[in-house]
Length: 307
Image (cartoon, rainbow, N blue to C red; front, side):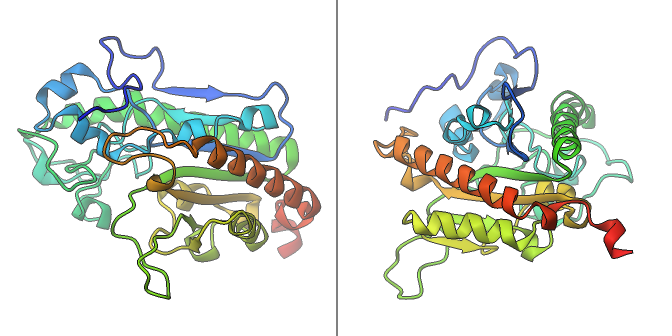
């Protein structure tokens, strides 16, 4: 079986665990983040994993950063993690860890009881998307601390800086967290013809993003022919919950794109329609920007008017 070879592993670690693709001019009140499209697999991690590289890559949001790669040309920054979520998941609390994965008891500050930990998908995941165990042996807590210090913390420092910079420029910020999802295990359409949803939008049940923005994203993508649901089965992860603060002018929405519509999930090869989806995403970005410009009075920091 032949897999797409998009630089999945290299001997050298990248100089930074993140890449920021910044616009020449910050023209839009939007920030885009791709936390799960990283494909640098440290050789030591691959060598000690119980799974082959192809299985580890099943958890990647393959090519999501590429689908959104035009946004800097449109006037907004794109942040992407370079390490994969199988190595460390930046869309989690910093210390969501499964105690069964470690050699020694974990410190009291570690969250060991979250639903994500129970599912095997904590900050350091126990399983990949196919529910296969990643590690042969237990880890030292020092290994977790090193990954958090060198990968997790730089990512969130950069994301907070981008959000603050945009907020300072426009008086509000719309953070779009960009993801993909597997094509299996998702809700079927109401007519029960087994068609899968194409895109799931998550705004934490309307608490992380102003409805006018969520409505705009949904209406635009639906108008382009995609089957869109909201908050089912994904309502948004740590990033959406942690950064979304509409009353203070920060609006966060998660976009999950069904991988089957743009890539072969077995070979990881892009489908021929890949450029079409990318163009449609650009259309959505422009529409969100236009809507935000018209509705900015509803999107700005509102505390003074509420007091």
